[in-house]
Length: 457
Ligand code: SF4
Image (cartoon, rainbow, N blue to C red; front, side, top):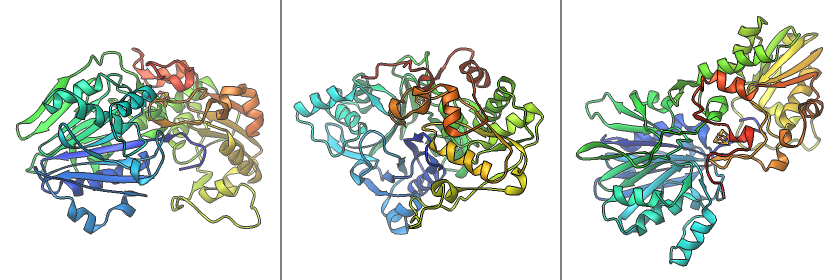
């Protein structure tokens, strides 16, 4: 991931009814690694006991044969985490496991609860002992403290006490529950294995279903809870979900382009964003150069609509670890150069349109523009396939403070000067709606507007 991008918080994946449930979850988490790289964990159940294994780092670093062997049973849930609320220590890695009124329960959460300060204080005052600083644990405490005896009723009861974004997987010894918040901020889909087990699969994105050859059945709806147990699948609409706020940034940047999210192909959405951008903000230029990887589909759309050729004038090194040792004598723009390198022959003496999905602080965009100029480009025109980010996200995406968001405090021309481009244009808000074919206003655009669809404090 390039520095200076918004970061997705988490991905979840669950399998119910397969003899190799934990191994399938491990594979599913592999496919969801882009949604979080700081920690990974799996909890399995053999019908009697829950087994949990968690660690910090990539899925491949956390899980080897011995750990997977310990995860017995035919049901498992898993999680990849990038921390936003709470810190990135192992204590905050998921699945979170607690014992309470419902027995032992494990939970995986994608999203972020809002207005939790008061809730945390009132739970602590009532004697709750927290094992982590993550807001996800609050849900488990609420479930455990519910007066309802049946798990599904206790979950519904608990969810009445929280707001914000949550796509959840909950594992009990004999059943699994999947839940999506009533606004449906984060994606969650249901699939089924064609294998004779006919196991059920729940995933943040469809690319994870593809990896294990599971068939996509449908999205879990906003406000819907799905219960999987030995009787099969049951769906409960626990809250109205008819006014959703799907995260538009899933289509702009977060989700993998080979996924279908909120009923749409992410790849086709990104190409459409680029096409609309080209119509709104044409450039007098020779060539379109997308900033890899996330700018590539929008760049292709921009090129197709503008009639300009597309060239891959920036090459990404995919094999960069999370940290690298910098040289003692500074190299100009070192941090970006480790990940991107220009192809001089494609850029020299040309008027270049750089296409990217977003600008957060502007620091990386500035380095890329300087790099492209240093490689011989005559002019550099930056085009961004989303509107300016002017406000933080409270729904599970790591955003800097408003003070650090360059577009929150500067005009488009001031940003252009800062990033050193000859011209700069963002996609308009209407352009975003048009590209996502959002006639019914079902997408969240709060980070572009500063208007939030739910209470945030
Ligand atoms: S505020 Fe932005 S990033 Fe957060 S859910 Fe809404 S669209 Fe997505």
